Image (cartoon, rainbow over all chains, first blue to last red; front, side, top):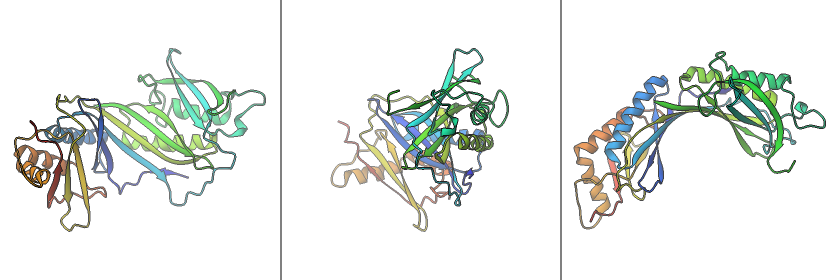
Length: 168
Length: 158
């Protein structure tokens, strides 16, 4: 198991253009794969200039996508009990405790659940590892996951098993 | 300017139904660091979920501040076919809402002829030059702009 990026393939870049009626259109380009983020930004700026010259729609945003796929030898088969509608809803908070981010992990392992409740203890080792991966990331504190507004997540708040298609 | 960086993981259950989990990252995260993020999140997710982890995508969104003209409409597009020299690889680029160009053509094959006229314009040549020097073919080769053929389907301005 290892998600990897195929460096023989170019980077995908897409531009979103919007017309006067608010309708959007997408345009795709491919960029060299060995670029840094900064270099990719200069390519984006040049292509934006070209599009402004050709189109009278608003060049609204550009997105560069890095895709990681499983190795050819990846053989994991999800067990029959797996179900993506069943989720582990994990809530993280920033340092103030007022702003948060909710992450929903599909098909949580049944071993996480404690009898009689949907709450998963935040001390659970697998959950702790996930929380550490989100809050600290691979680079360390201060470089972890963020809220939608760009605030650093500093701790896990709660974790609850939910089901999208079933009432509690 | 990068406005947002999001990391998306796609997971699949035994019925091949898929779901996505998403995380916001700092905008100054480098491509190499994103690779580290993918590895650590994949390891953590594999202990938490019994789904197969199919793929991950990191999306860097750049906010652009272009203006739109009142005449802009997505109902028409300028399609550019850029052929490679040996014709074994070709790709098209479709530009939404092409600017009304200072050329007019009447008669049969109007769209095709209008596009051919448009391609002669310095402003269009300049834009095409920027595209071919700042992007690559889908398999990562440089464009060999042997030919441009286009269709221009905007109705003639009244």
